[in-house]
Length: 324
Image (cartoon, rainbow, N blue to C red; front, side, top):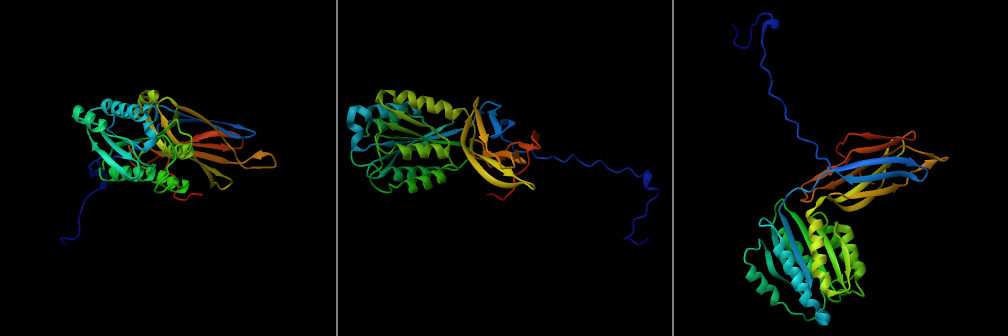
């Protein structure tokens, strides 16, 4: 017999082995529930989180203004106390870092687990206030610390300043670019301590990166503000979110909205304006993309579809590469 020819009898008598099951990786969906209804002014969209935050290692870097103005009303002493409170509140698997800035920026405490409390206290206690305010360099130093310490960890920055940056890069465009660079890497919360100028920069930094901006008038409130911010950071379930809107027939992307972050128990209500022709609301599709708190790749939500005045949900699927 030709060795290249396989002879067999009735194929119905041949028992073929059962193929092993194919494991399909789960779809990485955002932990959010969507609800929607059609109204004359557009689609009313409700976004809520449906799970608690999971345990994951956390990196926190405090970026502390130590310019000369921090000597007023004991600001620096309250700021140091609040910073130490954050460091000692972290879990053993978490890491803490401290960057200070005045004329220049300096890494005072390298990103690491807090194991020697006395050394931490001595290091923070040795900080003194002098000079101007180079916030941009402080943020650049923080960004470098994260890049030098890779890993699937949640990352958070707390910036405390009592005024407008007045040395180094000071224009709002430079800070907007920095916020865009930091946003995929970490959430950034900002605290304006009795700030008269520079609040817009601090507020924008937080808004673009999923943190919160807090104005603090009394320095003694800093410890409480830092603690509340850390609690919210530990409860985040998604960040760097975007609401995508497609319209028309066929559907084409037309706009996006930014949602910096969502914590466990959050509920957000949005009105999504839609195109209309002759008073009739056209076909519209809305969905979310975002990342988990550790930033491990893009995730997406189910899609809410408004068609012929009716709202339907479609299963999640990878969003199109094209963007408006």
